[in-house]
Length: 214
Ligand code: DX5
Ligand code: ZN
Image (cartoon, rainbow, N blue to C red):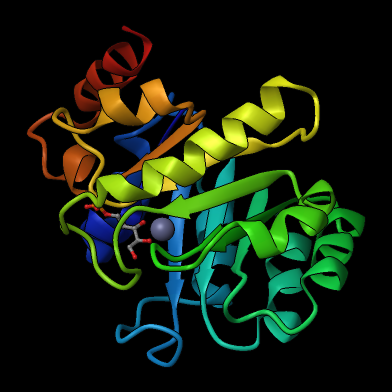
């Protein structure tokens, strides 16, 4: 699965930028609060508007402090998958249950330097595990290959029946990096600059998908 990130889109033409990726599996929406990360993007009112103009399942990546308070609103608005950061969440089990009760998939994200092991016990509460392969905050950064160890650990647990979730990766995914991520066991690839920086976003999605399969 490919999830183009609208962080690299033209924010003055978001409806058109969504139309340009029609047919993608998910659309990834980065919510940043200038507190959990040093950047500010958009929040629930804009997500609600975007949900009205697209049928692409929306993947909301909340890079915000206090997701315990805000996450469920995105699920109630109709986001398909809502991801919170484990570094920001006070009660991640409660958040996951609230998200699922509101009809969304529950996602948990971990930053490049955060170990996976302390959180393995709560992963059955979640549908998606988003491995950050750059420091969250900005598009266009370089892929950190060391995070693939976490992907391999997860893939092993999934393939042996100990876990059941989708492994998503976010940051620096492009034609040069997608194959190694696919090999490590990623299911869903977020790509911002590699899609919206391309002359033809739809063609870029197809090319990335084929590369991931090869
Ligand atoms: C970064 C965001 C990413 C970003 C990825 O904090 O979470 O979703 O859009 O952009 P690229 O694909 O350009 O690294
Ligand atoms: Zn993201």
